[in-house]
Amino acid sequence: MNHSILSLQLFTRVASRGSFSAASRELGLSQSSASRIVATLEQEIGVALLTRTTRAVTLTEAGVEYLARIGPILAALEEADHAVRGNGTLRGLLRVATSSALAVREVIPRLAGFSDMHPSLRIEFLLKDQRQDLVSDGIDVALRVGDLGDSSGVACRIGTSHRLLAASPSYLKRAGTPQVPADLVHHTIITGPAGFGPFHKGGETFSVRAEGRFIISSLEGSNAAAVTGLGIVSTGHLACRAELMNGALVRVLPDWEMGTAPVSAILPGGRAAKPSARAFVEFMTSQLRDQ
Image 1 (cartoon, one colour):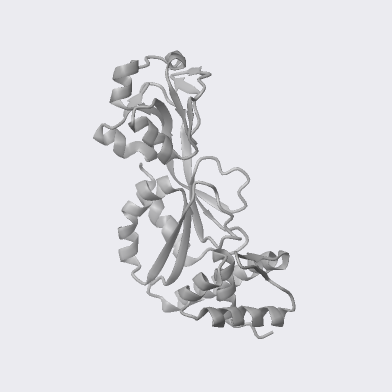
Image 2 (spheres, rainbow, N blue to C red):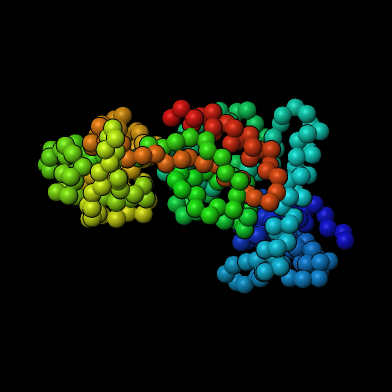
């Protein structure tokens, strides 16, 4: 076995990017050199790790297994480098996956504080409302709002988003302001990823069957629809805080609670987390804990 660290790093980059050209640029190599290095790795192992077509590069079944097994090795090497430096300096690339709404509204505006502490660290954001696979996509840490389902990663709660209803002043002037949850059946509802109801007040719980006229799969989209006056949106406080502050949206039924959704950081399971990923989670926890 004569696998260099570079060949393993390159393979993980190609696997996560689905592209030799993108991976080679990140590591300062020519595309032909990158292709040759990975081909040599496959020859040494004796199995194809990647399927190459004119449209994409994808992992073979053996490649998926190999990627999962070398992840802990590369993470341990990075941990060792970090430990012997002894000065807290973080280097390399940190890949963060999250939704566009959470990134644009809460993470990126706070990023300068983290970036200033670690000037040698490069950070890549993968902004998708759909949840990514941390291992196959080469993600170091994911930030997610809501139920994690059957996540195979290691999760920790870093904050809380309060669910609520909101509408634009123009809509409420035109359609009236609901006073109790039962009034919602007479209003236009925008249904987003945050869900709808039930409502709680004191010891009372009230459920409403209000069918959404507009069903929008992203929080940014559903909030934008509410701002334009299309109806009442079910959303989260973190996703519409700016609009509530500037008056573009007004909270509806403010005396009724709709529960909360956890904001979680997820690290890939089965391997040690990167030092940069752990530092990023600690930083975001300090930023979002009291929001």
